[in-house]
Length: 121
Image (cartoon, rainbow, N blue to C red; front, side, top):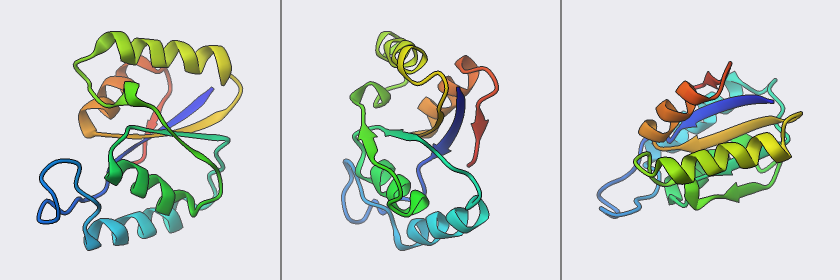
């Protein structure tokens, strides 16, 4: 299993304090990173329930694959759920190339736990 990790692009807290969307700059960042990493191909993409995480993945992947929302990626403090998520990945996607988009703290936690994972941003 090859795992790439992506931290959410810049959000617009003026739109909403809780679960804000991407800012215009975040959209531009996503487009820029899509061009930079266009040679990467993913079989699966998982995101937290955050609007900005989903939007980051949608723009970055250019709608090429389905994006799966997984609430276990919502909170880096819930080690049990994150561990369950990792077990799920290992059991079901061991041969795939996967993109995971989540908050910086979740991405950092996953990067420590997933051998050879790559942080794109």
